Length: 420
Image (cartoon, rainbow, N blue to C red; front, side, top):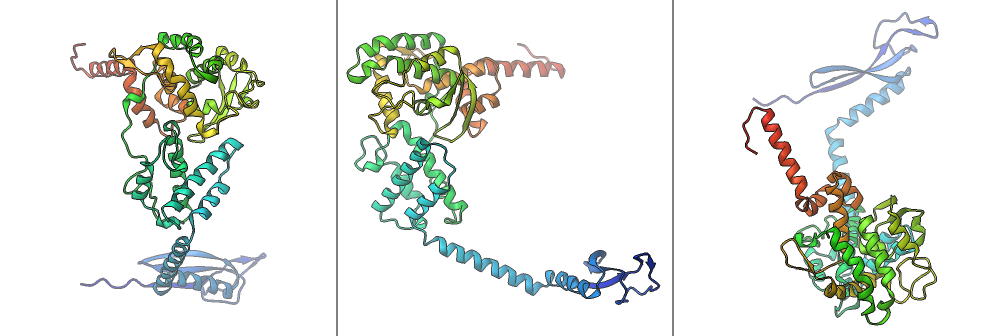
């Protein structure tokens, strides 16, 4: 048997009472001409409810009742749905007309970018996107595909044929994050319906290698510092003068847990006393008042602002190199040190030192000292604690043993016999 269509009744009634000290003599709820409060009687889906019309005027109460009837009118509801869908289609059609240069310009202008260095990073990223799109004959944002982005990523490299594709390995992940930020902005502003960096092939696709996580022991770190002077004495060109800079760089990374680019672009204003404050380049996360050991502060302060090769407002930023070449430049200075270091990994195999190992050392040492994974994740400015766990939890065997001991103790309290 078919269900009967539900009926809705909405009528105005008068709630007789006292008005300005005078009691109303009427009792009929349909009486219109007194000044008593008006309400709506609503019968809907088999239920009765009473709602104040918030007026003493019958005419105004009728307008309120009519508005409530229109809200429930199926014809009006369908017309509103159609109008909304048409508006969405119009907006989508408009979005198809936005060109890449217009989109990147709006993206950069809309960012709350602090400092000239950060602004240059965004402007450089926008320039690379525009140049790639022009070469690929891509005009509108909606013409970009995930497959096209994946192919473009494969062209990046320090010696790429196209200038806009010449990206050092150390800075590719930073640029990659800016590309993803741009397309998330396109989706958020309605210029794209789907993010091409996520489906079907993510631009950041690829397994994170555990080999990237390699902390140094205390002995290895001390040997690293002791190797700076002889390594720089044997270096060629300007690198011979970088012993103080390398010492300050290594100490800052080790004890502040920073990526190399954040240290290399560190302005002198970021250090006040022994407190460090900055905005990271990769994730734009804020680090505020991080306390540094005296050895780090002394090493940074030993770098005179009057050095001819460096900008006076920065500790490491060279006058001769563009900002996007900093990491690759210093990697080239650090790499030859491995001949003197001769480090070995946990399995006794040759270990090539890279500056990021100092950030790994900072993280692992904090965990070994008993700091929680959540707190270390915040210090590293990771977007998720899962990232921290994936990289560093396997490195801290004492934490795993501690968890196992806690599990054994719990089982024994539950009455289970466990042989340690």
